[in-house]
Image (cartoon, rainbow, N blue to C red; front, side, top):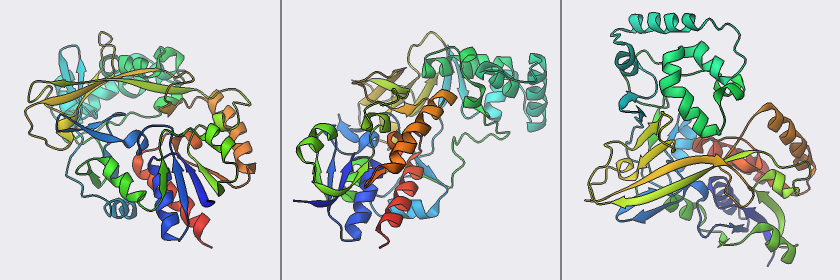
Length: 367
């Protein structure tokens, strides 16, 4: 059978495109190399807890059209993301707000906090930041940088902040209120029952093959579809012609604990150098689960190597220049649409993935 579209990747981008294509009367075959659908949003039940297998996915958006769209496929709870930063045995609220500043410096009013931030910045003597370390200190001063930025960032990127480009931290959000809501977006929540249920509904009218790697599959099925939607690694698609792009990957250690509540909050970032992981996720808090056990995941950020799962691009100037070469090849590739974080070598929040997939689908299917 020949399909209108072969969609490579059963994550959000591919699933939204497949749904829109089905709405337009098109046929789709969706393949994914993993043994499940959902991409990095995949959730599954473990000991009565919905686990975010590939890390916390908290849906948030200010785009009402996207919010209305995704709510067709699931009911969302009213979860508000209020993570905690742990520096050794000190706990701080994120994002940096009045609770953070009060704990750190004893200031009480917004005016006092602003004055203290200005004082801390001035102490550094930095006027033209040359790297991430200097950029962060230029924005918030040395003490806040040391306790809440430096070690977390170095674990996340696998290199000293002094060796990272300044533009990675263009700004650090400082909020002079006592509001612990991490996101400013109007709409926020977690789908009841997990994200996998959403993907199933989006793919309901497509044929789906999991455990199916694209390159081997297409060699055996060259004429399987009129067009391809490719959400895998753009550099891999072109055989790493100009060399591989750089990615970071994440390793998870997930376990069930025989306790009702491990850390009292869904997300704790570990901002000290002693803990090798960047954060611990306690999944039950995303859905206000009251079961007697809990499931936690420790996250370790690592350098990506071939054979690993790439999570997010390393958007240095060198990588952006390399991606531009692949983008030029992609623009000339007949009958192939590249999309998603790997296909476009771009970090996307979930709402932005949906918005882009809808935009691409509507442009493609308007005829």
